[in-house]
Length: 81
Image 1 (cartoon, helix red, strand yellow):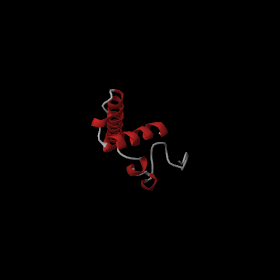
Image 2 (cartoon, rainbow, N blue to C red):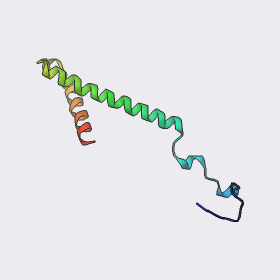
Image 3 (cartoon, rainbow, N blue to C red):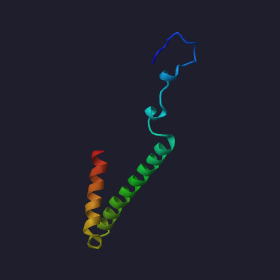
Image 4 (cartoon, helix red, strand yellow):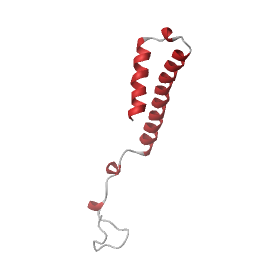
């Protein structure tokens, strides 16, 4: 950042302008990504809780192997995050 370049305050030369793409993703995509991340976390929590509730109720045989696997993966995600 140039504090003084001989130009009055607020006046920049065209070559000094910063492109908007250098500032990061647009606001909409950040908000969409945040909402998508929250949705994925709730989905993962649902897999973990479903598996644990079925096991606690003694109905563990009704849960498929894939749900057990996803539950373990998401549980490891929450523990090691």
